[in-house]
Length: 104
Image (cartoon, rainbow, N blue to C red):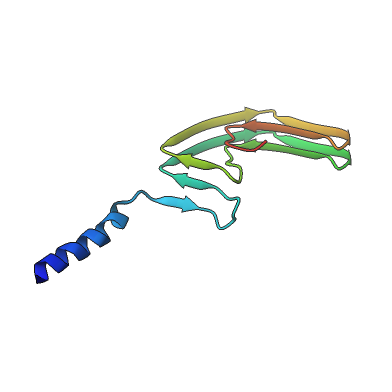
């Protein structure tokens, strides 16, 4: 009887130890990764300029946007050279994104 109870206890403890590692963000709209994520990104001479009212500019390389879920192994190799993002006027958006997962 004692060995049966030990067997049941071991069966209940073992599955979490064999479960795949899950990385979660503390934010409710954060990133969840199940598996391996290898991101290699490089930027050179990246510039972002916003002129006017309510403009948004960004240069991103090798980023994972919030609210994204990745399952499985993911490899990203991204490179940008001489990337420029310029927004002029009002309520404009300009982005350069290489190797970005998720987003708008």
